[in-house]
Image (cartoon, rainbow, N blue to C red; front, side):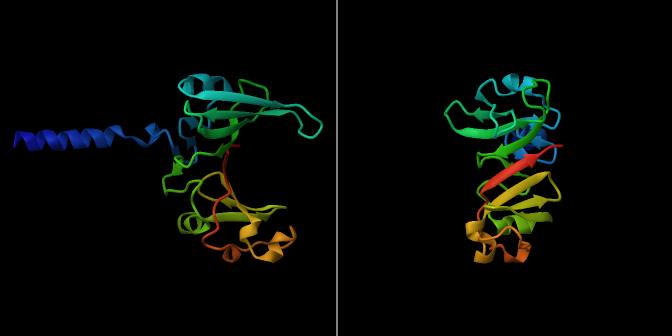
Length: 184
């Protein structure tokens, strides 16, 4: 009897200690792993002290000043690419996050390895934009935009940006090309 009580207590303790906010790979509307909407660039060194941070600055006539911050695991696996809201300002919050590691998933299981069918089954599509190389899909429930390479779409869309891409015309098995979270 005591063994059963102890076992049940341990299970309850384990379940309650695994809070959503502690998942280092969970994507929600306000969180991407260890990052929140309020995270500032100056905090990244502490948050990712076990990992590697690479700050890439771009100053050219083609890219209007800015910087990307890349987060790598110590094994060399790239986790995320971050764009500060204000380039070059360490007090700036994070604006856009490109999810690169498939370990990052939403509560509904959406990751970089997902397909269009998984998006349709779990999320409401706010809009779809037709760009030169991709269909850009904006989601309603989370501030995500996901690209699908137009090579997976009917030819009419591959050759034009003027045709409106309807959700029903994207094949279910089309893989996600890029997965971004955009915090305003």
